[in-house]
Length: 197
Image 1: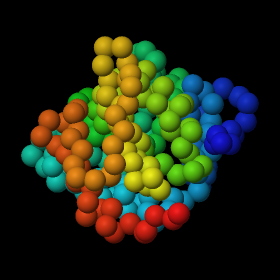
Image 2: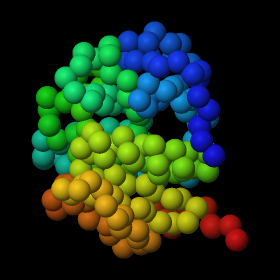
Image 3: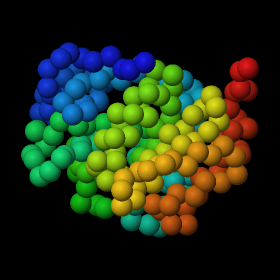
Image 4: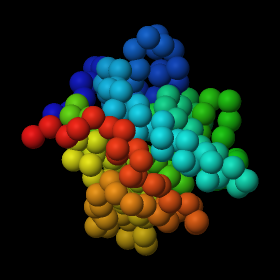
């Protein structure tokens, strides 16, 4: 199941910034997708914990950690901001190159992107956004599956993302794009609602 499209027109960041702020969209190759309604508390708990762990681990490093909503503009070349046709709002992201940060958000691929999946966004995040992040040079892309207690990790190599590494939300998962940084799952998972079925 995909996210609903705003319309059939091709849009750019120049259009995007004129839309009302009470409805959120992401642009992928000019297509405006309506973002899912407010996430569940489980989603927010996971995103918040990941942000916290990353923020503490990177405290004395030049990398910056952000949590949604933050506009990430992903140009295909050197086009002006207003002409960029891909703008996403990852759940959690890390940017280590200061020149990518400006008052509007981020321009260019972050070093790490984490999406916490929900039933309404899973296929969108797995297919469309994975391609966009790969094209933009995002070094590491994580998809956290709350219901299955799994994380799918894509790491950028010479031929793109290749085969993902799928792990249980248990123990620690190192962040290859951020040396000496790992995410600890056990305490977080113990606070989540029990799995159904």
